Image 1 (cartoon, helix red, strand yellow):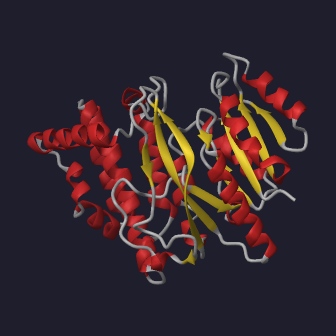
Image 2 (image 1 turned 45 degrees about the vertical axis):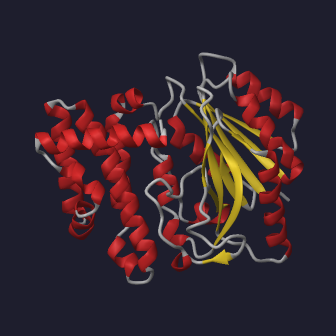
Image 3 (image 1 turned 30 degrees about the vertical axis):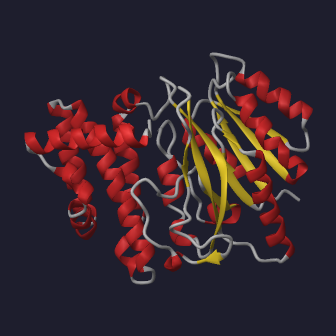
Length: 340
């Protein structure tokens, strides 16, 4: 019996992956660790993966694939997962041992009671490369602690407090039954991963434990500001996929709080993508921003209006003053929250 499947996407991660994998081995044979070598060629990622597969044959599965990007690595994890629950841990991040044991014990309890909750949520921690004090993202003000709940019982989220890939643990069956498939050769697909399955989730459970350690600050990291701007077309692609994933008005008819949350989530994606297009600032980038907002309006006029009327909807502006103000707000938020 595998209670949880960990998917560890690896692309030239030889300098980081041992710490990640070692942190997951605390679960022993109650878990499986699916290491997906995504066509690494610049270091010995593949050899390290095979080493773990050889040394821990009852725990570690190794998959070597042609480079397909982060999304395809996760797809492989979902396809091959046999655990009751599924958790992504990027190869340059790691898990807290005590928190991981708490998560595993909860899963074992649910299995014993023959009552599997669809989604488990834990805290995550920003671990900064420059040694800055860690920042914990928790949900104590949003969710009931250590008890089953539905989304209707959730309270107001802060803008910095959305459910992320780092905090989410999905029941594997949910992901497999909806046929979740992330696009190849695309960064930022974690937004699609955490957003798309939500309407299929009927029950939640929040564990107030700082499980996921999110290592932030590497110059080549996908969330680095300069890297994001180079890959802005991929951010646009992910945002459009999220827009098309669901009819939020239909969801609102049965779950108003979930619909509001999903609206807020899309609004944040629109804001993030738009602010980087504003920062790029050339005619092509501003045309892409205009096109993105038109795309949203054409697909869902109600969602477009809702996003425009939120505070973050200010990024839809085309005025020089408005865009300058948006850049100022972004600069302040980045300094305070240190999200990249």
